[in-house]
Amino acid sequence: MPKLNKKIQPPKQAKKICRIAILGSTGSIGCNALEVATHLHNRFKIVGIAAGSNWEKLASQAAAVKPRVAVLSDPSDAEDVNKLRSRLKRSRTKVELGSEALERMAARPDVDMVIAAVVGAVGLKPVLTAVRHGKTVALANKEALVVAGGLVMPMAKKYGSNIIPIDSEHSAIFQSLRSGRTSEIRRIILTASGGPFRDWSPDSLAKATVKEALNHPNWNMGPKITIDSATLMNKALELIEAHWLFGLSADKIDVVIHPQSIIHSMIEFVDGSIIAQLGTPDMRTAIQYAMTHPNRFDGCSNRLDWNNVKTMDFMPAHDRYPALNLGYEVIRRGGTSGAVLNAANEVANWEFRQGKIPFSRIVAIVADVLNSHLKSGFIARPSLAQLLDADQWARQQTTLAVS
Ligand SMILES: NC(=O)c1ccc[n+]([C@@H]2O[C@H](COP(=O)([O-])OP(=O)(O)OC[C@H]3O[C@@H](n4cnc5c(N)ncnc54)[C@H](OP(=O)(O)O)[C@@H]3O)[C@@H](O)[C@H]2O)c1
Image (cartoon, rainbow, N blue to C red; front, side):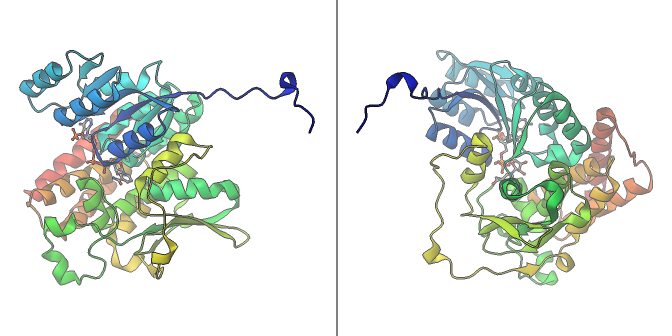
């Protein structure tokens, strides 16, 4: 066998370390992202982590992964801040406070990728900051696009920022798109498990408890998205997210109920081929793909055991779930409608979790607030300030409707 000439062998490609900031590191997505980053520790360096108020979890994470900065964005009181500072005083991690610190973290020159995993509209400003600084954004915080997709997406184009979805349905579409072009899509089909109340009668739904609504059959997620999955408001938000991410009109985005959550979503191309992405309901797969795209590496998520897949069922979604119509309405109207839908839902969802309204009122209240806004106050091409005003207005209206 001839000896290889070392001189003409291709040089080994140097591994590029990706420096990341995880906004919402203490949540369900954030913890999974930390796990993925730790699993692929020779490819990722964690520069920053951030939480809302859970200083204890933030402190333990900082002690474990030793980031340069840890942000507590919304501390409950000064005592918590003192405890966090004292816990980290001998470490090299700098503690920063407040929502502006989230934006500073998203803009840091030593951060290549921002993992947006906070819950709610609070994620919008740091996402906009990351985009404006040309960062890669691994996006779980769908609310940022629901509220301001019309600002975020053009800005991403202008500043060369890649937005890569973490939401499993959108990750499935994003991955399936490697089989064709966006212009070749006939429609995309987002799958929905149908949540814990899929087979409940309308009468029983009125009596559904918070505990029952938080008991999602397939996915283990934070409380807000788990309730959104039970009302199917999560799917409405996902319709809007898909519209902005993939530039599709409402008539090209469909939903089908698929209780087993094995198919995470699919694309029907114009020639009739349907390409889907499948797997276990384990967010680490979608998170890792967003973090390593366009490459794939050995993953730490649970693998699908085909011996345990007995059946895959599908059923229509539209007639049973009024929340979906609100999602389609927002795609058609655009403007301030997404900000209002999202804010009204954040409040109604929270009030249900506090035991203030019955489950069956959540979507009805959101629909009332949205309809009232569409009749008067709607702005077709809003600025960021006008979107934030619409958000505030909807929060006040929903609070009034609840009381
Ligand atoms: N969980 C899933 O499987 C899943 C799947 C797809 C998409 N998503 C999306 O991912 C996002 C996060 O969901 P999640 O389930 O991970 O939620 P979660 O478990 O409730 O975690 C929320 C995270 O946001 C932080 N946070 C809350 N308020 C904040 C504030 N004012 N400032 C800064 N950080 C704040 C929380 O910090 P504290 O711990 O201090 O409260 C926590 O780290 C949501 O947009 C959701 O729709 C989630």
